[in-house]
Amino acid sequence: MDPKEDGLSLEPDPVWDDRFASVRDRVVDASDDRLCDVFHVGSTAIAGVPGKPVLDVMPVYVTGAGMRAAADRLTDGEFQREHDADDTVVALRREPDHVVAVRMHTVDADQWRPILLFREYLADHPDARGEYGRVKREAAAEHPDDMWAYTDAKFDVVRSITEAAREAGYADRLPAFAEGDQ
Image 1 (cartoon, rainbow, N blue to C red):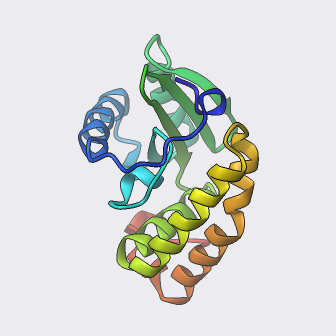
Image 2 (cartoon, rainbow, N blue to C red; image 1 turned 90 degrees about the horizontal axis):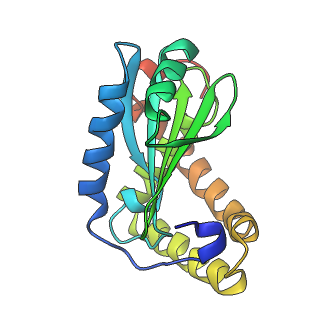
């Protein structure tokens, strides 16, 4: 399954928590003591939010070496390495009905904190969830075969919700290892 080619499915599916637990175990097994934590992120992590059939899993590592060692073990047959940068590795596994995206970051990477802020704020605020769901459905209707345009169409609402999370003090809810630039 490739969401870029197969279009979007926007119906919530309660099976995602079980799938996350299984992938989380796999990531933990592939990691060593440089793993800080593994987070379920993206739309499948928030009850009631529609999303494409992609399970987004976000491990955070103390060091790039720890992240790369885990990525090497994950991509030894089961996952394919799709992106590799200094502070981020993305590994994908395509299933017949969904994709598993493991987006690995080092603790000093810029990307992972806003993702957690966004997730936590959406989980706590039904109005924000509703607005995000509405924007996602509109974006999917306008761009059913263009994943990049679909993502771009959501940019403003994602930025707005993330900023609302910052203003509401959600950075204080981040794990202790997140201390630093937020």
